[in-house]
Image (cartoon, rainbow, N blue to C red; front, top):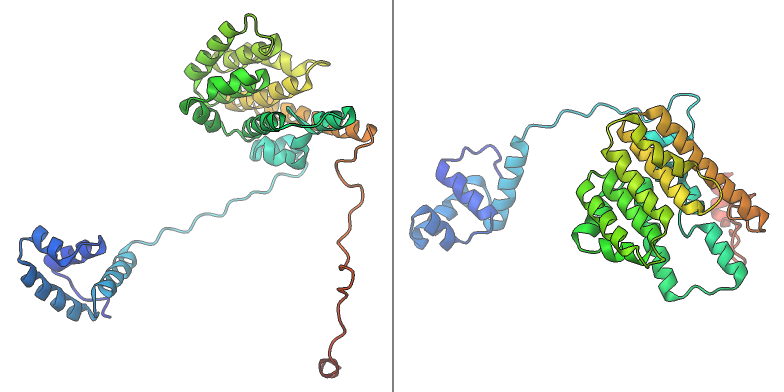
Length: 318
């Protein structure tokens, strides 16, 4: 194949149409020739570039056009190292809360390890409905930790927002956080309004969840530093409903980050880590060890001990 063959405009157009999958009849119609004449032109084209058929001509054309494209400039190296003395909050700012927490994210948020351990201690089996509810809540929690606000918008756009929110007050709070923090304030506001109207006579929509929903909307819409205060107050609460407190902490981290308040975001991330560590210690006090104390590489399986090297090979080693 001759990659340096100079093409006239007609031949270039023929190659382009061939690359698009056009037949000789279609090419003839587009260029204004009879089908017989076009077959002659194509035959001459194949001979000029040194190929035998249409497939090879297309491959030749693609290689030729790709080689003609300018090569992109090499990317500058990115330094992902954190300064000496950096802590958890610094890593959360550099990456995201979910990445920074790692396995510890399972100790905080709704339906975490503490909830699961409590369920086992009560002897309550997890039915299909409960398992589905837990799975949905953990998806929302992970999205909030990651800062994947588009997940909330996806649920809203596909018409699932009100259903998800009406099934669980905690899910309603997390979904509102995702919408508000992602800049979808109108969608978040509508959800708060609809659920506020439904709250009358509904035990599912508790006051603290509704307070959290309004607080995160206010933190994003407010222009002053004090706009985050209601959300910070919920994140600092002690005692009841630790999951709601932890959701508020994750939302507060993102709110501070959006406001470029790095020190406040860092401190909030550190506080969420402390929540996860506290939950881990509580589990151990209950007799549950969620993380191994000692680790070792697995030993070879029984009956599969490494066999001795053949005598011939052993002699070579010597």
